[in-house]
Length: 128
Image (cartoon, rainbow, N blue to C red; front, side):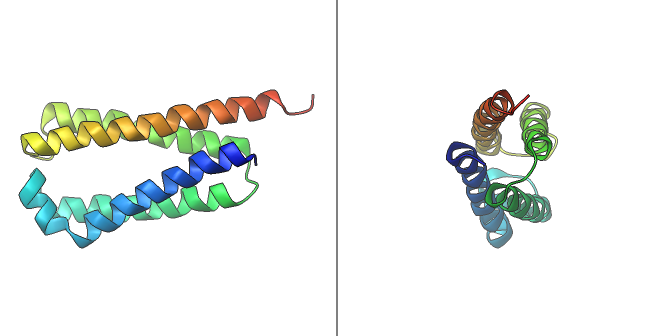
């Protein structure tokens, strides 16, 4: 795994893990600030923590390119789901919560773009 590839997947794991910890530790205050339900914030935090561990393990080992593409796909699904939540009000978020949801979707989309670029580069450098 190249240093650039490791960087983007490690950054994703760290940012996702940080969000997970905040969602788990401060679910009540987040619900007060952003809307939604504290139980939902905890559930999202638990998912994000597990996902961050998986992405971090991938980043630290010479894993296959298909697994990297699976991470990109999950990130893309997260972006779509986040935008759906923001647009439909599915989690009963306040306006600030909707802004936060769109903002974090933008960060995740950025990770997906950079990860896909390094994965395409890895594919291009594989021996025939």
